[in-house]
Length: 404
Ligand code: PMP
Image (cartoon, rainbow, N blue to C red):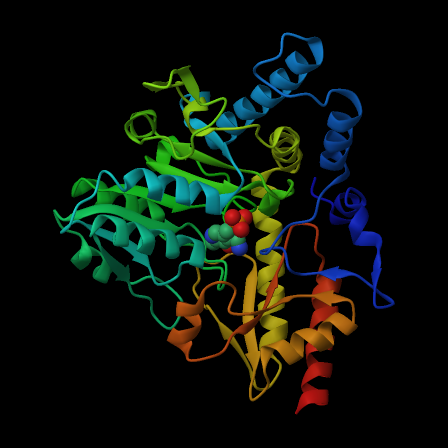
């Protein structure tokens, strides 16, 4: 039974004050908060079995290796990957995307096309632009409509025999739109293109099944889903990961090294050069256990309630405009007050202990589309409450009064 008051007890930070007021943390799309179970996993690692992995014969190294590899298997099961070696530990979504983009440099040529969407985070735009510069391929963009949805009829027109790759986020960080990724994947496959889905914003809300999606690559960051920063995962189909060259050279990723020639380790180690964020991987596993303990169906139902409540309450404020009004949407409300800069609203909310995001949210093309400098973004997690939404609404009204 979902009980938000019980859940809040798991998060020490939710009990602190900011500027003399109880913290109302509504910046979950930027990073989520950390439950005690994950903090305990981190403390346990550094207190009891901190050691380098994979190469030590001593017991601590073995314990650390076992815990790290168990975490990989937890992640495999969570995302329903066929093999654990299809899960590559990364430092986060950005790392995963760059790893794939770099790998495709040698597989693309002039005349090839890659498709991104108008709803992307900069980390799912810039690496592909850099890939185009290196390979001579051309970048095409699926346009969006005023509701903040991708226009699928335009996507259909962009697909052709030239399309080699398609990259779309599962959920937009700036607007919360849930994109029709199954359709996007299936249509891309019909023309022989590979698909990478950026799951940074979906994984806190949804449990993606990479086999059911038939997606080629799926990336996410642990810190968006109650885990630590600097940790994430890239899922890739075995065939694709075998085809892509290594991203970085170094220890751990080799089979044999001589000055004449080096041969590479098999999956997943081929993509994991150097000492990884061992504790981060273990804590990522703990975060997945924690979230599954609450249950993704319960999380989605509760967050939907929060979204509807917040949307209705904020919409009552005269002069407040919400960006991203798709019915397929997760718990993000991006808005502006008429004639008032989002940064000013955010500053006043902070004085009231309310943490929201203001600015372009690393998605400048979306802001350009709406011809605005940015938005105020309140993003809700399963540990937020309706009372916190009320505090936000009161704060926004106050900001409006002070700044009008
Ligand atoms: N893609 C999306 C949709 C995101 O929201 C974010 C984080 N804001 C990223 C990519 C980048 O994630 P990270 O900074 O953890 O690499």
